Image (tube, rainbow, N blue to C red; front, side):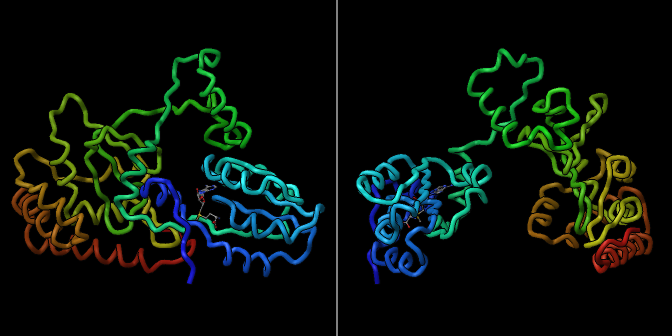
Amino acid sequence: MFEIGASKCPPTAKKLRGGYYTPQPLADYLCNWAIRRPDDLVLEPSCGDGSFIRAAAPRLSTSGSITAIELVADEIAKAQRSLADIDPSIEWKCGSFFDFAPQHLPSPSFDVIVGNPPFIRFTPNDLANYRKAHPSKLISLSGVNRPDFPQSLERYIQSGEANGVHRGYKCRVRNRWFDVPSVYAPDAFMYRQIHHAPLLIANHTGATSTDTVHRVRLLPTRNIEVEKLCGSLVNSVSFASSEVLGRSYGGGVLELEPREAEKLPIPFSEDYGVDVDYLDKKLRAGDLEAALDHGDDVLLREGCGLSKTDIDRARSAWRRLRDRRHSRKHGQRS
Ligand SMILES: C[S@@+](CC[C@H](N)C(=O)[O-])C[C@H]1O[C@@H](n2cnc3c(N)ncnc32)[C@H](O)[C@@H]1O
């Protein structure tokens, strides 16, 4: 029905910011419907090159107003140029709507919000590219005095204070609210909140984590292969024990606190023939039972000498406890 306006941005950048503009007749039609009074206060949260502003302006008098926000400076400049001499005052803001909103909404309030925000459907590739272009960084400032911070860092910290980040519980109890207390990279991770069964994940990326995930360190005195330790957790005795040691809250989640996780029995020996690649493949495919078949066979039967009957009992105990937990709803604790 309408020809979508072409943009000069490179396709990937354009796609990532959702830069597909609304044809003028469509923006006119929508503003005609949405703007009811000439003194309405209008917000366009992602104005692009301004089709909604062009449509809104003739419908407003000098007592109306438009606030136009746009992430990309070149685009907002285009909109400003094409709307230089019009009656209602336009407040142009170049930046992210999400930075603007906490400070300015709901006051001043608006009568009408028009626009076509970036409704973006990302592919995994888009996200990977975006992450590469915008890596997130964990800043560790331990041992650096605040007067020595570069200006840009000081501004970043002050913007956190302006938004009240320093008053949150975790930050408030620190000597300096922005010092993350512990940033070491562990040998492995373990989920604190568990849906089916506990898993240990070897840390091949040098990642760290907050306390939503447990960090696991190997004793330097024991020369243990971390992947093998991770694989050794995949067995029915460890899984059933996790159900007994952990707590289950409403919603069916099992939670293992650090002390409880430390008590989890793991049948480990360098000599056990656990096939880590096979387990990894099965777990990634969501085939927990196939992974358990292998773990039970090499760890419990061959390794620890358990009988088939005992292994079956452990497996069915795990299944029953897990299923009972899953069926438990809303706030009950065991
Ligand atoms: C689908 S286009 C629509 C532009 C305009 N509203 C229109 O209808 O023609 C989305 C616009 O949102 C802008 N944008 C993306 N993220 C934004 C953000 N966080 N804050 C403000 N604008 C943003 C993009 O640069 C792009 O110009």
